[in-house]
Image (tube, rainbow, N blue to C red; front, top):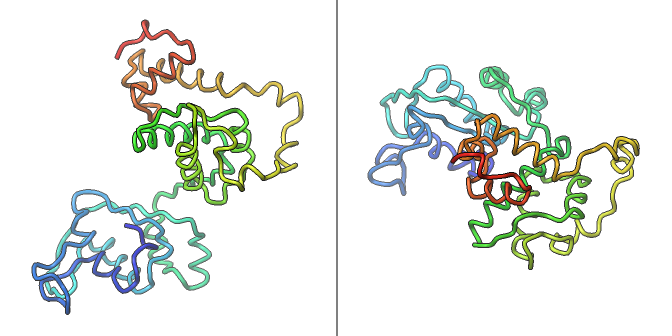
Length: 265
């Protein structure tokens, strides 16, 4: 459930659902809300920082008491659900500003996982690129296999203010514009083609460390071989560990010169 994408006026009915005839325009049979649908499973609350204060107090009660009342109903419904919340905002700052309930914040903050922005984990760019290439190749029926080294250099030195979604959009565009199995610089949006490489990143590593930095191909080969080792040679399991399809792993092994005969499916 994306808390930022649903208007405040509709969020409560989306969250709790409603009984038949609860209000004008309601379905005669009522509607099952996200809470009831998540019973026995997990409810993911994306952009929890955008949830209205009025709904935050009701969510707190649901988490505490494991029950709720649909709109227009006096019958309590019990649920057994796990709640996972995500946000790109600083919830502690919102609490200090009075925009987020402190009791809900501490109730949700049982296990806190901080995912750094993409600009702070450039090592993930290659894996994400491969994932999005495979995703949009399936969507568009294309066979774009990779990005050029020039494009990779641009990606590694871009700040990615739009985070992973921005990278996904760039790859989707690149696949649409590419006229070869490789996305080139001219397939990128103008703002990426025309940007200058920041001096701070250009000189981030001393020359000797830049020379020692392994190439992307060597890095990918090491990752694939490690996955195959962990999977004890089973390519299906190795593909699962890498988050790619078995056919994509087979193609990458051929490109990298890794013998497929010594590994099983």
